[in-house]
Length: 116
Image (cartoon, rainbow, N blue to C red):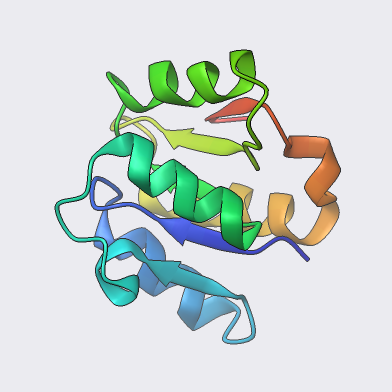
């Protein structure tokens, strides 16, 4: 099962819903790991060091930094961007499907967008 880091731009209802539906899902939030206010590059570095896919609602800057890591040959365990127009319930369902069915190497170095 995939593990995740949820950044500060992700709607809190998504994290709460994921935890409610799958209490065993390994998901931490940026504030939980002492990265509140950290820039995107630092958050991506931490996620890569921990082997966690990054869940975000930041559709403007995070993707650029993710691709910079890939271009530089640095590890990038994958980013999942959840658009603001995606209903919370749908986001939860699709993230659970991804967590349960995808292997870490299948999302490594990629940016995925919800809805899938």
